[in-house]
Image (cartoon, rainbow, N blue to C red; front, side, top):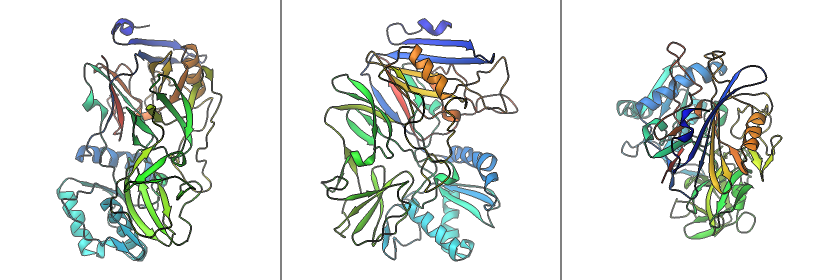
Length: 450
């Protein structure tokens, strides 16, 4: 144990541990226990030029080399103060969301010819670049990949404070195979998050959700969008009662049929269409209604149950009811069929080591665990922590007496700050200097310590 064990006796119990694995490698982790409930909020920033440049670097170095059909990448954020030249309607579909509309028409231009011939498109992209809302890398003239970026991307270090705990949380779209529909954006988070009973982000795929109730009880449930009441224009909708929900991996496009398809991501209707055949977003779903009249309000809210206090959905589970989980209990994409995110996720339960973050409960206290890992390219044996497998993490949770815990997004996204101090190194580091390279993320959590 390290000196930080006693740092916050009255506010939280903090432990830093380091030991040797059976292979003689270092494993370093941090464990926090905090009274619950406590002030908690989601953290989101504003995607700026520096964030776009970091994302461009990730694409050029890590993602585009595996996709030789693309000669470069163009990443952009839309701004309603910069009007786009594209019509909302294209046949049966009406695209209200600006980023989706821009990508829809760029994709269509590529299918029908070369978009650089479109003067209005070129002028619009130049306006975004002038406003520092667009970056490009590689060969932009031949066949680059045009991708809109989620507007809330940030670096969590900008939120560090001396009276808070800050951590990363959710999966988000990043791989090129995560972004197949025009309604997908780089960095779009997915998975349930509710704070003080309000559902901020809905569940989507049926994956493990850590949940607590007003009574103080907690547990882990598998929740999906089909378990929610969906509220639009004051009307309540339930799947197979007065609507149908189409989502991946069952549907890549909505069935051809009469009625209205609402293309929904998070709390917004991005587009609507009649007749079916709409692409299903990877971080969202399609709500089908028999009435073909579109709603007047494009906002969407969700309800689960009245006594809901807090929930977070990422997964997989590490321990449930104090018992070690022994493998994946929900589906992940394995390279066949209709893609659904995360489309690239290491499915080696016992051997795949990485940096990890987890959130759970122990005796009704909130428990947070961070496990330090290192990318192979920068790993230094005898100095760096090797990270751990999901199996090893589950046993650490069990040995720590944790009742319920789920794994959060890990790898290069994994980070924890306690009172403004990051005690564990980030797994992404500069090859030249060895300094931490902090990835942009769309969503984090801030726990205010009383």
